[in-house]
Length: 107
Image (cartoon, rainbow, N blue to C red; front, side):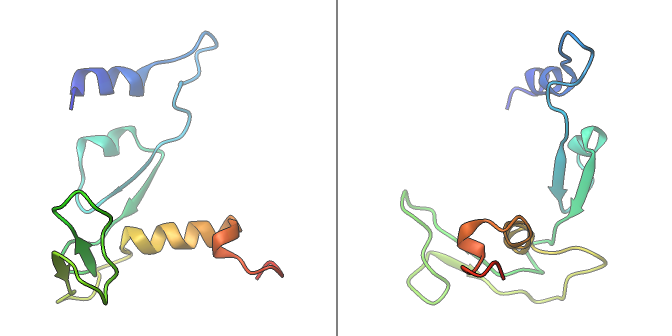
């Protein structure tokens, strides 16, 4: 990453003095340098606290119950208010009533 350019983009303002990136959400397991720029910080789980499926090949990641390259199974429950980011995305999609997360009746 070009950290100098990233910092410049995060601090860049338009002609009205407003930030060009008006709202930044950071989801991380630990406090990173991005937290200083964040408007909202969502605590993520560590690799020991979440299910994960990873592929090292140039192909879509397989389903949890199908052939995969690596599967992580949590060995500890999440600490504090942290949630796996995958669950956060699903909850956001549901709250925003995105079509794939919502039934025809809106539930």
